[in-house]
Length: 266
Image (cartoon, rainbow, N blue to C red; front, top):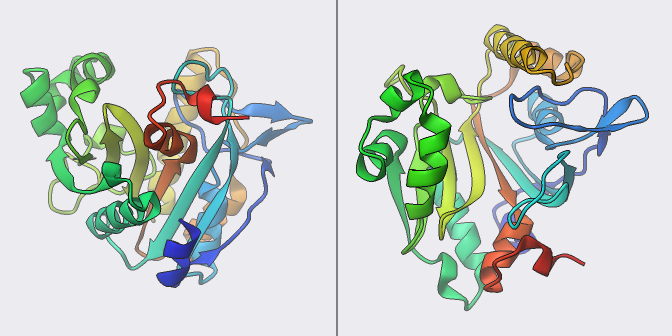
């Protein structure tokens, strides 16, 4: 993977593992460490680097999420995260598919890919529009039980254009305000990557983080401090860019033909 990024003129970076303020997300709980937190992702720090003028950057390192257990989850795992200024999220998808195919070498497991929108996938596998499922609060249940198990069975599958309510840190599509510029990547029903056409509007991002912290408070989860350095980066000016996060342990699990992520960890 490193060789592929070096060839594409990416710079490898390293950002702190122990941080003051993680991004507040509704269903991800950070690990606390002496009054601070262990990062769930290097995303915010890497976007600060983008705001300072970096154009293409990647990082491979440990991330931590509390209470993550099961055949596909670990509390400590290895993340590959990368960003490119000036790229849109579809360009990033093509690059990601090429990178995975290159990294797999002679193993053809990641050769070939396809695209399907979230709404089309819901209609095909769950028999309902994604927007209806989202409005009726059945989105997550149907995603896990009906949609995800069918994705990536023949080749890498990019699940594109999430409902705008699930934009996370991605921007709303200028072509269709119902959806966000977000995709996730699947193979054999397993989510491998999450990617955004990045949100650059500081005020909109603050509103989303406030809503996420309100959700966390209502569900007896810890509220997080304000990520002031990240907000300053947005206010300074984040370039139009796209970024992707990939679970390296899951990649290795698939390439090794394993069914439990612990089989590829020491």
